Length: 128
Image 1 (tube, rainbow, N blue to C red):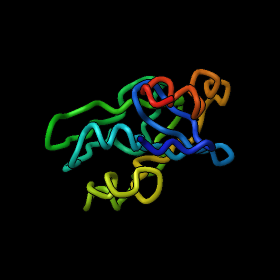
Image 2: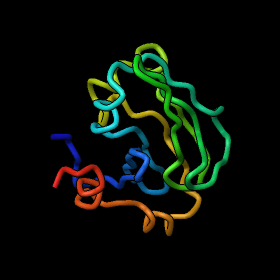
Image 3: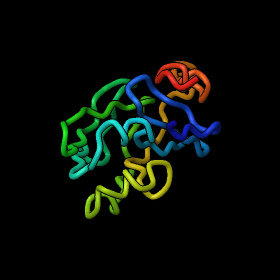
Image 4: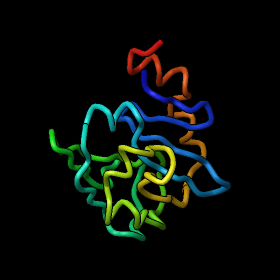
């Protein structure tokens, strides 16, 4: 059973979002990190780049595969987690804590309506 905190929003592509005023922290879910297995590298689109909801913002490489990362809400990438640059395995250990990936300055909060709440995400991954 995967950990799915109630206070976050989720995408169908397994990113999570934590809203803090007009910014959002973003990472991948516990389900995703378990599916990927050992994460060995994260490549993020350059900081300061503005992207639209659903656009690719980077890739995550694990022992098994490489997966694209998609922006959950439109906005500007204002910070990349330095911890995961040096030790991407932190994502496996703490996907909702120190393993966050980027911080976004949100362009349009209305887009949060397009994201899943915890119960809907649990149904999406078949854990209800």
